[in-house]
Figure 1: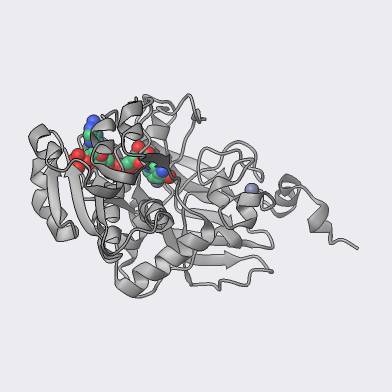
Figure 2 (figure 1 turned 45 degrees about the horizontal axis):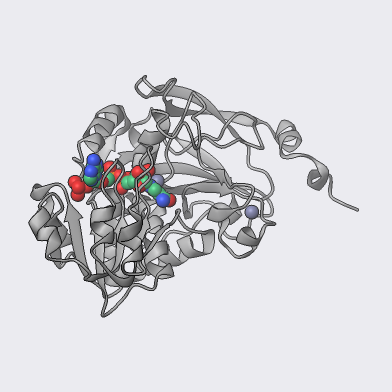
Length: 369
Ligand code: NAP
Ligand code: ZN
Ligand code: ZN
């Protein structure tokens, strides 16, 4: 006979267990600053892990979401609690949890669940779940109703299948950005088999871009950073770029026509992608991970003339996220961070908009009281 809990809907199951209040930070509209907000977390079910959040990275997607800039693709439901680069310690466990014990380090990225049945889920590519994954924030919450609330909060409860193990040899605050910026750059670099003997370009030196530079370097590629910020040149070299090109310098750009195998574009705003397509060799590929709110025009000829490809890539599946964390543990790769108290979050957003972050803001959640 089926266990009673198996036949209950997630909502009924939570009704039997209860929920607890947690403090977070939320935006109440697309134009209001983030401010303290009391939210609820479900008490852990059989397969759930409750995590006390130590640090949460600040992704540009958080900003796009709270300002409802992706209105046409994923409209924001307010109040919105962003944050999907979460690390902390396990404080409570469901009876059936096998992967974790109390006190373990644990991490949560951009997803907290998915359908588990579609071709993508079965292939470990939950990020491409066909009915749509349950994202860590701004997704319908099957347990509590309303939408999911992210990591700008003290605590989160997540099914263990969507919780990652954290290497213990790395600085914890600098691990947080790996959960989005890390996997979002790791996954396409792996999928397109970037490595030794290849010329690789990374466009934009922000949160994603600086991880792209570090990882492409770690995979053995010859890395060029394209930036609009001349003052980031020295940092780019320190982070692993072999060459730096100021993308506004047209003469410099033209020197590199038809020379790249692969270009990873991490830019968060409108820009000319054709200028980069022209830098690819025959059969080269450019992959967009940056997600500007408005469409980017593509010149057909930039693709046709050298059988070039233009593709996109979204975060990564759970198995690959674990693989990336293990790789980073082994190779001692972490993000370069600016640790901030949560009270500085609105200021941090303004700096993100000015491309003024070195190179990921991370919130010290101890500041949330
Ligand atoms: P970020 O830290 O703000 O970095 C973006 C960088 O893009 C800036 O540092 C800047 O680099 C460059 N840039 C900004 N405005 C520009 C403009 N108008 N023209 C040219 N370059 C410009 O952002 P992030 O957190 O890395 O996120 C980047 C983008 O990726 C966002 O759109 C985000 O939503 C998206 N994202 C996508 C995924 C996915 O799964 N595909 C996952 C996470 C984030 P320079 O100063 O070096 O020029
Ligand atoms: Zn993100
Ligand atoms: Zn699925």
